[in-house]
Length: 73
Image (cartoon, one colour):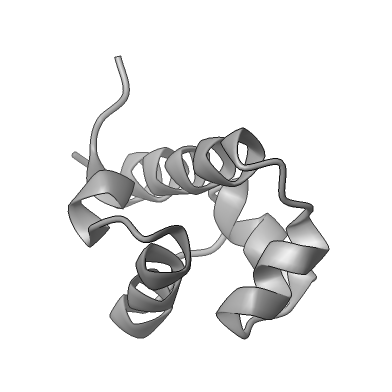
């Protein structure tokens, strides 16, 4: 999988999980410790992120990082 496709997939997974929990971009970003603008860029696949941010996101969602990396069908 190429890097851009991976960024888009991870971003879509993060957005879907956030929306399933009825969290605003702002509220979720604050709980993870990043800016809403940066989270928005991640969700749209325009920016990659670090393992540390993925860990913070997975902890906030109480899911494994593997769930953020799954390919959606």
